[in-house]
Length: 419
Image 1 (cartoon, rainbow, N blue to C red):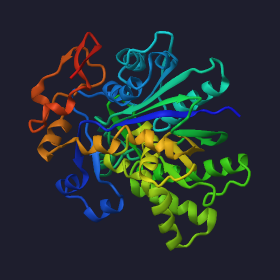
Image 2 (image 1 turned 90 degrees about the vertical axis):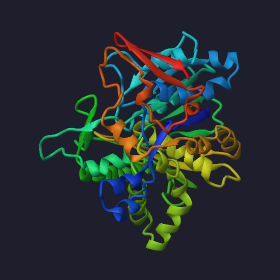
Image 3 (image 1 turned 180 degrees about the vertical axis):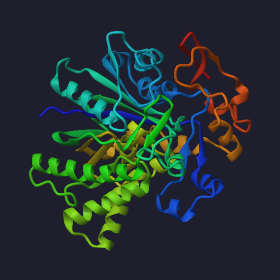
Image 4 (image 1 turned 135 degrees about the horizontal axis):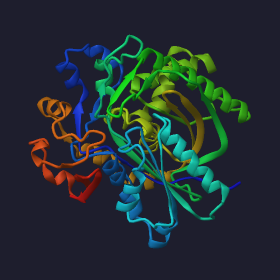
């Protein structure tokens, strides 16, 4: 059986973040409720950051570590986002350019709510497994930011802004997919997928969001169960409790994952409350730690959970991880793969936790200024130039050194520079 999966992986969690509980207190929301939802921080995109800069800054350390010959074998760049910057031009073209990759390369973009990352990843895995181009690699980058407002209007689709604001984040996850899957080797053919039409959350315009939070939760729970049941039909003797050493979930917020895991444990293994809690701490909690520090990064959240699992769990031998991916609208999938001590050491070399620690913590006034649109680039902006005065006054400029930032838009063409 041929191997495929993640050869290298990195996360970019932005330059600035906001403490969620500060926001909860500022908005005079129920603190106890949000503590139960297991939220801690949310990444906030700056005016000079967009889906392209997030994607490139996530992928650059991976590409820089390759030899020239290895870099030349990247024959596919897939960007996965619901934060696209143009209805026609793929942001993968910008990513490809600023990473200096070979022009003999497929470049395209996938939009499919929070499932987009898994759609891109599975496309890349199947390209590698097909051996259509033996030895070729694919670069898959999930990248999303939240700069939108909530749509006003009817009763059916009215997202609770007090809930959406603390959980919406920004971030990117870059994955080099190849036939040498050091970080995560997929179990080929072990996939349970499930999808149907549901109007739970959507982006009806480029910079806005609408949704039904209760319907979204119900759809998530239903898909979690149905994808695993389909996985179980395809994989002999698969057992939710016994087959997987760890579980990585799409994580809109930690409390949602905890609730889904509790439901699955009760339905699949008739577990007691104490068993559910113990199992959550052992198999699931390591995977939500990074998600708690960025908020929901849409298409990349499930891979952020996978990275968090690998970085934060104990791996003394090969271990199997079950992965649940969900995207509103909806499409979902349960799949699995194997992680190893060598893969953990490689991922830890990316120093994801250190990067998250080094971000600028926004004050509430700084955050409110950014939220009100101070210096922000909206969809379809024709001409724009970065005004340094729109950046948080208390932020050290050195935090951006060596990173790609958006400098200017000239007749719709985005122009970037290395800070």
